[in-house]
Length: 182
Image (cartoon, rainbow, N blue to C red; front, top):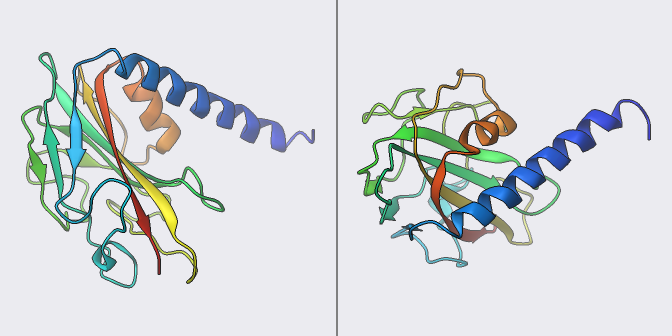
């Protein structure tokens, strides 16, 4: 394997192992759920969430954060190639009693509730909507993490840094998937 490919494969292995261990631990925790009034789990996402529809972050409803939750975090990723694993939205330090996130969150570092957002894979602050080539549907996952702590991340933190920060702090985890077609 060429020397330049080795760091990529090591990072990929780390991210995959963190994801597996987080799912395994979250399965033992209290129930947590995330839904959206805009689409049901596994269904087509509205045009408004995509790049040609305004890139409005979807409204989310969060239910049953377990006792001991100090903060909530949200991660939206693309599931299909060629951008599988790309982070489209990372929010953290949401108050533990957050029951909803309204549609079209501002693209600012700090939200009204003092939660923080990170740069998406696109390099934009906050939410970046799906924007694949026309044709086939692509799948996306929105994960909500109930955490036993607040996170301390620099503004430039990337997805692997986000995942390392939540590792070991997950009380519960919920996922909503959607499909998008341009």
